[in-house]
Length: 198
Image (tube, rainbow, N blue to C red; front, side, top):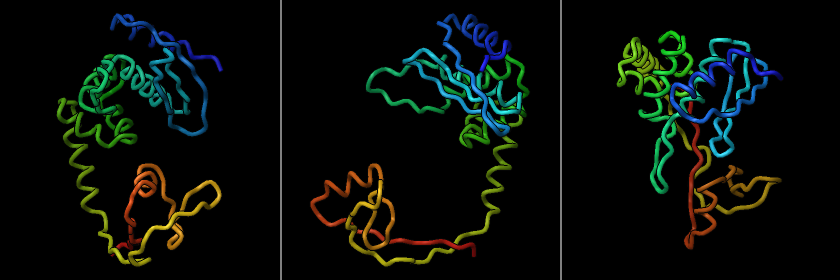
């Protein structure tokens, strides 16, 4: 679909202000209110799937532009993708390009709760109260009581369609855990537990 004029203008303005090369912008629609986006620096592009909420569209594009403007990490150096340095750029862009602090905090924290902690440290108005409210809601959640569903057992792997599962408890084993179990010289054991609100 055609990229809206305001989005093209915003990309050009942010890039010119920062004196960086302008990324190519891919714009598509998605059902639902919220937008999603991704920055592909190696391809020189930003892709946005725009929901129906226009404020969220703007925030999503600015979020991806913040990734575009953030320094490229030096080889071998680990950088937190959504860390303090990123949010310093992002919240400045939100404010400079017409997003109210309350909207920026609400929409950003709906995606990444850690943004509230960074926003509070950066002095974004309303962030301290939003962070306190979030922590209070976590403390108010009912505590869970854990019980053993399948006792501790040795993991024996087998294929189940496209997944690798434990023969005993039928749990999927994926990623780093699957690699660790496959290369282990000794048997790896685990226990399957479940939780219920107390």
